[in-house]
Image (cartoon, rainbow, N blue to C red; front, side, top):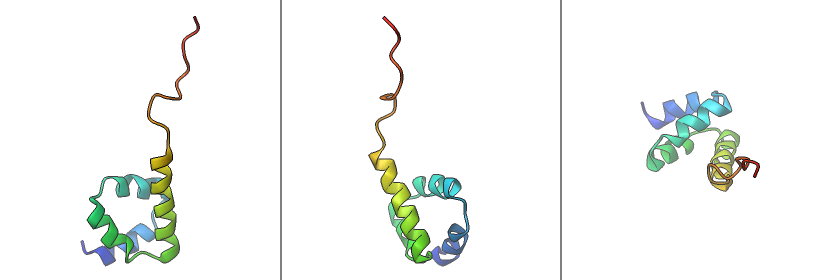
Length: 67
């Protein structure tokens, strides 16, 4: 599928589905699709992806067993 066609589909996807799909894509491919997305939607996706990089590492929020 060409980036322009994928962008039309991405524009209407739910956030959770879009984020999961975007995470699995190669950066160059995702960039090509995002360049054809609606501006506000591409901005929202960029923010969602940026928020992922700010998340604490897995396992750091687990409760410690009582001693």
